[in-house]
Amino acid sequence: MEKSKSPEESRKLLDKITFDLTRSIVKRDELTNFWYFFLIMFAAVGLWGWFIQIRDGLGVTGMRDYVSWGMYIANFVFFVAVSLIGFLLSSALHLLKINWAKPISRVAEQVAIAAVALAGIIIVMDMGRPDRLLNVFIHGRFASPILWDVTVVTTYLTISILLFYIPLIPDLALLRDKGTDDIPKWKMKVYTLLALGWKGSAEQYKLVYHAMRILMLLILPVGLSIHTVTSWLFAATLRSGWDTTILGPYFVAGAFVAGAAAVVIVMYAYRQRYNLKDYFEDLHFDYMGKLLVFVCLVYLYFNINEFLVPAYKMKTAEGIHLRNLFTGNFSVMFWLAQTFGLILPILLMLCKYFRKPLPLTIISVFVLIASWVKRYIIVIPTLEHPFLPVQNVPDHFKHYSPTSIEVMITLFSFMAALLIITVLAKMFPVITIWEYAEDKGIEKEIISEPKN
Image (cartoon, rainbow, N blue to C red; front, side):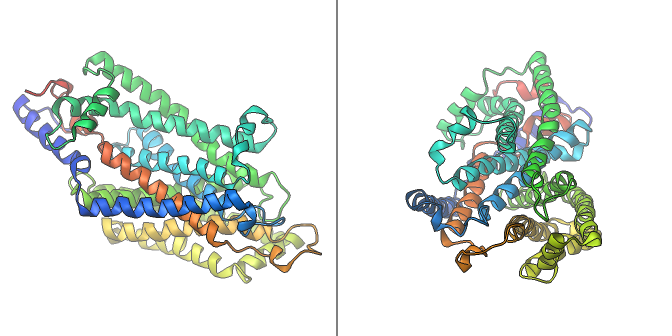
């Protein structure tokens, strides 16, 4: 935290910070309109595909008796993975008092909320009878890992929303009292309602700090549980490729990689679009690059462990699975994901130049794409090689390829996630104003005082 300034200097600096960090709220031009149009149109196409699926049944997908999980479950695991970054950046690093992560925490929560919301929606879209969703809650058995997954996803989404909203309350009050004339009146009414009568007293700030700390502590076990339980959906079977105790930490490590890459991409988009170079600094990208290198190294270790141990024993079913990945039908996807999603990014990001904003963002795009591909090859190859012999079925039952309906619904999931992030950025500051102002030496009394 910087030294305290004089009241006049503090007010001028606060006005500048408020003006800069509300740029995402007030900026509306043709590019913004086109971006909304683009996202909504592709999301609408995906919803139309889902309507066709509900009308005609899951037979319109490439899923059959053997590959009963397809692209939808790969999407689900991917979104659950991306959502875990909220746990790491806005909670774990916050509790460790790592200050460079503070300006990034709200971006991480935006990404987490969008990802975990879409993870839940994708599961509903994967159901042949979504009208029976309530049966999971009414008649669910605690012995079922599916019920565990539904529980932790719902809990994680709830805590993530609270962790996004509670630190936002002082900002909402600040915008209510000192917002610029460019902010639409309907948004000002929303801010007034959501500010809950915030006055900025010491007791209120103490309550916010206390609530944030409780939520940060709560989200640690829930965040670890969400991806660990997801891994148990796979590991609780005897199928080759999934029958391993390492799958829990393996999924968690991979989640940090995907989430960190997603946050870097969103940070860069905000930095360029809303001219926030003074807030998302090169320093933040450098640290995010170092963090990404670290989690990639951990994930690489689990990848080596995942394949080295079964390759050493080379049981019959494991041998078929590994040969299919290394030299078979999925070898191109497998090696591209490992090379461009792990090995090359690690080597490049060890150099400081590639931890600068643009190079790091390009690397993060490759890492994020590879993360999705990795989830696809976790799901599909194993299901294509069941233990029971495949006989007396059509040839297309033996192999899986996604249909246009699955591609449309997958596009919906990505467009809907981007739409949630966009709406959050257009409604609320992308960096916590009061925390940033406090770090710059502005007293809370100045932040909370009414506009003259």
